[in-house]
Length: 109
Image (tube, rainbow, N blue to C red; front, side, top):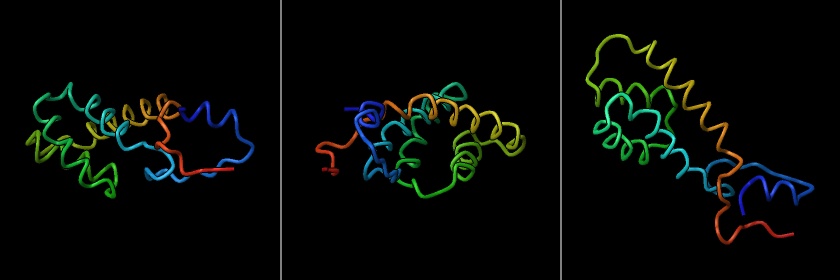
């Protein structure tokens, strides 16, 4: 069951978006990889392990790490961040309703 199906069958929804109710971490990893790969496939694939281990950091910190450490750029971050973060947010918004619920779903009525 995905989120959209769950919502359509529910009268009350409580959102806790840290991977407890929604299994969103996998989707976020794939979306981040998709957004960063056009810049450098190998760097994006390496960065994903860092991203996975540090979900508590801000998006800006994640993108800065990718830009400075994995792409080894020292200037132009703000323009990169604006485009990459906007694309990440756009794709995340498009796909969030199809994020799978954890199995078994911890919610019972």
